[in-house]
Image (cartoon, rainbow, N blue to C red; front, side, top):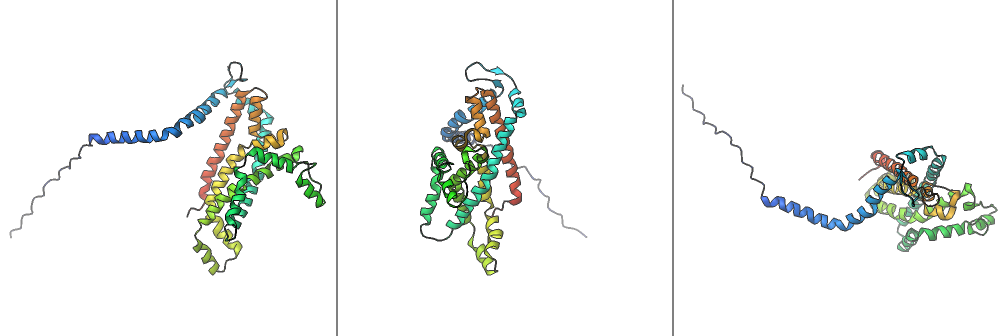
Length: 311
């Protein structure tokens, strides 16, 4: 019996990889150079007015300096003194007090306005502009206006409370009421910003979800709790992050309205620099504040995975 011989299989030969054209590398460098040229108008001011001053502040925090004489190296002495100074703890405590009162108030108010203006109604665009107007108004103007409104002797707020038979507090003249006065003014000013962000989030929610819930017989509260709030969580996350960062840096309204009755971290930085001539310690305190804000922001970004719903 004879078999048929199988044809020999030719050995595979490696396919040669064509060399990279010499001009491709040049095109990449030209592309990188073009990108760098377009970034320069933003990169140069960022370097000159942000990064270099930050590095200078870090270097200053390691020295004792009164803005006039030469710097004297103290290493981490400024940080050690701040961490053992009870005024630092008081300043951070007042800052957290402000955030704890400001954040829920501004979010609840902004969400209420966003829900109201998300409905079809006459004059909706005009109302949006009116509510957003305080956001673009100078803090000096807003703080002076609220300082007048909350004047214990002649302010409109205490006058209105008096008509209702309520004795108005001392507001910014009373250390116990100075921070609530600042919180009230701050929330009023920022309501429009929060409203715009949340309103954009509300308008991005597909109407099919709400219509399906209506068909299933869900109440208004159930639709709000089960559909609106979860799908609004990305906008809520953005508002919380921005509001917390701004809350830690609160300064203008506290300085104008409350003065020494409500010392926060940034006002203490200002006083250390310009009242007491301790620029090194003020720089160290600013870096402590930066560390706290950075930690809080990182924690929020990591925690968002548990409660933020995208899509």
